[in-house]
Length: 190
Image 1 (tube, rainbow, N blue to C red):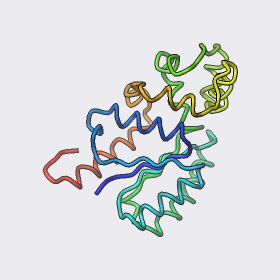
Image 2 (cartoon, rainbow, N blue to C red):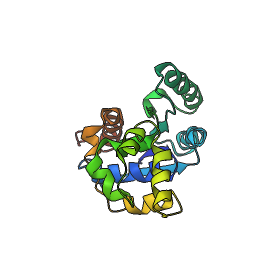
Image 3 (cartoon, rainbow, N blue to C red):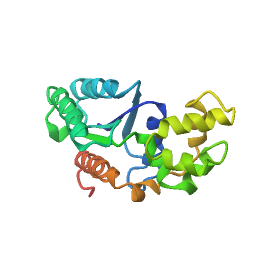
Image 4 (tube, helix red, strand yellow):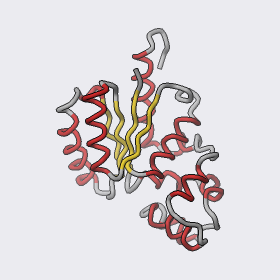
């Protein structure tokens, strides 16, 4: 048995994979990471996993807003969708505002080696609000295409483990994964 993480897009999928591989208590554990074409796809894939595989699922979504009301509404719809496949104890909905790629902009020292050119001060600020757009802009500016493949390949060797400490919104994900993995292996504390 395993635990799954479902994300929208290749950048978010690689980011989650590198986060898991860099976490001392998650590395090497039975975690599957699925990347979809967008937020709607994350809900559909998560529901299929819950229904067919019967394994716990964390749905990590781009919030696409900073509005708490809109985020709650989006999560409510996903909740209704997922609860038809499994009880809420078996899944987690984690919206990251505004997009999952914003986590890369939390640590400038981590971000710079992932980019083909140094970002401007303005791009660093804008990256907190529209990270995917800024990342695509930086790769286009350097002539390194296609995006997001160029970033995904640069992330392959990156150590993103510092993001666990820099991103409080990842704590529910960490707790969920550790709890579900511990429940599957009696005698191992979360």
